[in-house]
Every structure is written in structure tokens, then in C-alpha cells.
Image 1 (cartoon, rainbow, N blue to C red):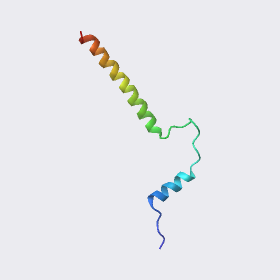
Image 2 (image 1 turned 45 degrees about the vertical axis):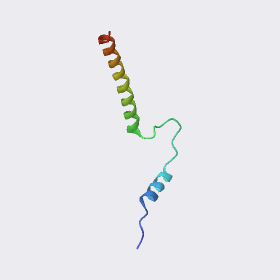
Image 3 (image 1 turned 60 degrees about the horizontal axis):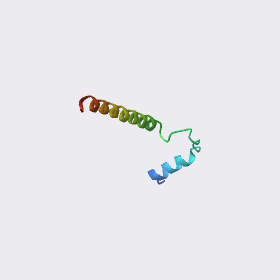
Length: 59
């Protein structure tokens, strides 16, 4: 009976078959790029809103 490779071995085989990534051409994980950018934009907008509220109400 043939033994099935462990999950780690199967992942290592798949990673080894991939071509090397081009330098600064690809983000490691596509959706992660958009999540990162969205969180960054959201944080900047929240800071502007808070600064505006403090400027209006904080005498």
C-alpha cells in the first residue's frame, strides 16, 4: 500500500515547482495587497476625521 505524502511534503513539492517571483513585480499574496492598502487608507481617513472633530470642538 502506497503511503500518501504528508501535507508539508506536498506543499514543499508545489512550492519547488513554481517559477521564481520577479523582483518587485508581484506582491506575495494578491488579496493581501488590497487589504493592506484598504487598511492604510482607512486609518489615514479616520485620523483626518478625528483631527477635524478635535479642531471643531476642542477649544
